[in-house]
Image 1 (spheres, rainbow, N blue to C red):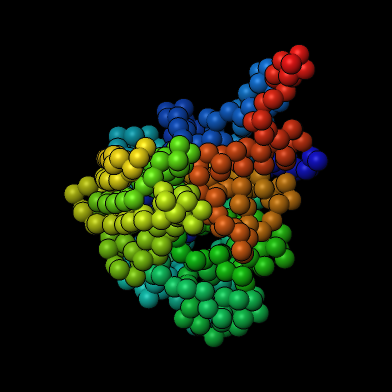
Image 2 (image 1 turned 120 degrees about the horizontal axis):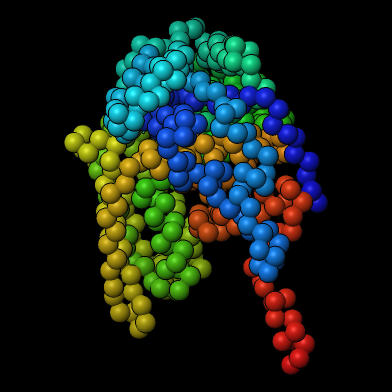
Amino acid sequence: MEQTVKPTDGKLGILVPGMGAVATTFIAGVEAVKKGIAQPIGALTQMGNIRLGKRTENRYPMIKDFVPLAGLDEIVFGGWDVYSDNVYESALNAQVLERSQLAAIKSELEAIKPMEAVFDREYVKNLDGSNVKKRATKWELAEALMDDIRNFKEKNGCSRLVMVWCASTEKYIEQSEVHETIEAFEEGLRNNDPNIAPSMIYAYAAIKMGVPFANGAPNLTCDIPALIDFAKQNEVPIAGKDFKTGQTLMKTIVAPGLHARALGINGWFSSNILGNRDGLVLDDPDNFKTKEVSKLSVLEEILQPELNPELYGELYHKVRINYYPPHGDNKESWDNIDIFGWMGYKMQIKINFLCRDSILAAPIVLDLALFMDLAQRAGMSGIQEWLSFYFKSPQTAPGLKPEHDIFKQLIKLQNTLRHMMGEDLITHLGLDYYQDLVEAL
Ligand SMILES: NC(=O)c1ccc[n+]([C@@H]2O[C@H](COP(=O)([O-])OP(=O)(O)OC[C@H]3O[C@@H](n4cnc5c(N)ncnc54)[C@H](O)[C@@H]3O)[C@@H](O)[C@H]2O)c1
């Protein structure tokens, strides 16, 4: 059944808590594309096609021509950071994009200045900026964020907003009582409960203001019952966690292939060196733990060792991240994969990925922002599992195992778009192409 998708009327404001490497690469890229000096490579919403109907129909429209998405010219950017550098200065600091390329969009980037952040050093020890809101309670901080959101919307004449968390990874915390219901959570905001992280305050403010919220870091953030229920109540889409880039992207491409051919795996050692601010934050063991949990879950879910103990029961999976300043944002990762085949004979795969983290993350931010806005206009609220494609540790309904296989994730995403637009879902069965043959037999 076709869902009715409201049209895009007016401007879309994309709000990003955290205006560091990922956010500035994203914003600079969109501005460069608008000027016609760059291509939005890696963004499905800009460069992807979708098949409709049977293969014989030859219908492969661009996704952006198939579903009503905000155009890049209709987007305005805003955000918060603990440092007061404008987006141009922050992009220079991040050293992802060339100075010469940034020069062409300097005035657009300089005009975007971060609002004061809601920040707590308890959650990110390795940073110490001064562009930070000071209020007596977390409740007042949430109210201050809501004022920011309201003012931004009005000043920029936006009809809709979305928020994508691009700020640092917070220290590892587990779900506790204050996260269980919205009443407990609001009480916790008033009492300054230490288990309410800054990212949760942003998520709360967004949801309360009817703004879809996606979480690009592995923090718990909106993956708690209080905020999941609150999102449903307020009819707001939410999604997370942790952008799927670099090594985990590779893992969710390679592992489903090995699994598909029933090849065994008994060891997967992943190491990374990176030297950006993200690497600095992850150098703290509490913050690394959050990332580690997110990265480790992937293989288990794809390989399902409990169903295939002979092939994956002995799997030893280790992930290391090392802070190495000379590499900057150019992360280097090594994977050593010990596999075995027919009659147990051993083989090895080595992957050495010289990637650029933020170059892989930027198109994800764009796609998420546009798809979250689409979801809201399509009347979809709560957890948007169809966007798992973009996350290392996809948020799912309680009790539901996440899907990590990137190909299954893509099928889910595309079928959701078809469903929204009243097109037939594609099962890839394909027997009907051979119907004459079957009937003749
Ligand atoms: N780059 C990738 O490929 C990738 C992949 C997955 C996840 N992530 C996550 O995305 C996030 C951003 O990565 P990055 O490389 O841009 O890091 P970064 O350190 O360059 O940028 C993060 C920014 O967030 C700011 N910040 C920290 N706490 C804040 C708060 N409470 N409010 C507002 N601003 C705050 C920091 O000052 C910093 O400028 C990290 O959490 C990272 O783990 C990145």
